[in-house]
Image: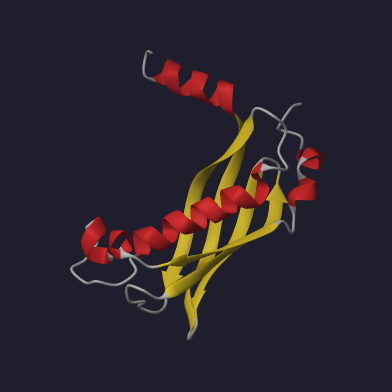
Amino acid sequence: MDVTEPREFGQLAGKTRSRAVTVDGSMTASAVGSGGVEVFSTPSMILLFEQVARDAVQEHLPQGYTTVGTKVDVKHLSAVPVGEKVTISAIVDSVEGRKLIFRVEASDRLGPVGKGTHERLIVHLAKFMEKVSGKYGG
């Protein structure tokens, strides 16, 4: 299958996934080095956005294909302390050839925590790794 064919991946529009996590010490701004506070960090939120977006489409891709993150544009709206549960959601908002654009959201029991967009590119894993290896002479 040629992944440059937009019609091949249009069926991914609308695919969604959510995951609930409890904020622990490893997810805090202090732990990841993004600040000196013991609250849910922006880098941890972004990591979860990427994971949930990947999971929303991975099972629908042909064998040997995956997605890689290419862009993140999010706002962190509210602090969340350790011990609180956060629900992370991603939905494929649009498909442009091999590019998937997700709408991502995070919320806790009190309301919105973060939101934005995340882009991922569909790649053939072996070809992708061959290109990376060739770039670095490996």
